[in-house]
Length: 230
Image (tube, rainbow, N blue to C red):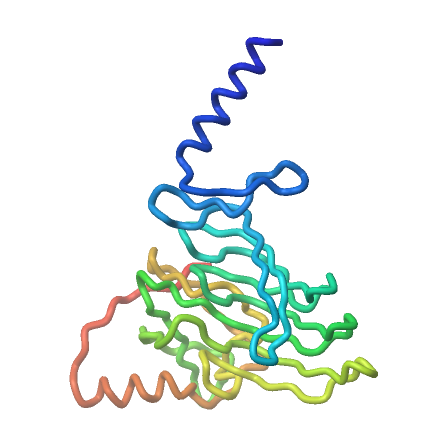
């Protein structure tokens, strides 16, 4: 038993020696880790005081190489849950939900994170006469780090009724023929994709595709063929 305890302490000491700083949580967890490169790693808890009229809050989540990853929860200073946000590559990704300080649902947002190492996506081009038929695919470069993508829903917090909805497709108003609930990140590092065919898709081409085709018609551009991975 003493041997096992000594081995555990040795491993723990070795792990901590690889950290520049950290704190011990109330449950004995190692939180707010900063590695020797100065990057945040692992579970993290942050506190922000009220500033210039903006209410303070606390948040908890996970860091990978100094970037937020996965689900982050935000609380008021009174301890009430006010937001649940999803992150990928340090940017908002997926469905994020926000509440009032009294826990009433306020709004739901949908985002797409862009892979910073490869900011491209392959979009489907549909037959104008048959919106379910994909006739071509084009590679487009995505501008920004995170894009509004999908359905945004705003609620009346007092009644829970939907006040309005907004539809976005790669940061542009409208569904653009893309699935509204496709909340996976845009990662095309392996250059693969799944063809989407949905009878609810609109026949109008998304603006991103129109801009791309206009540019391509003026100058021949070599693009990579492939599909996005999910």
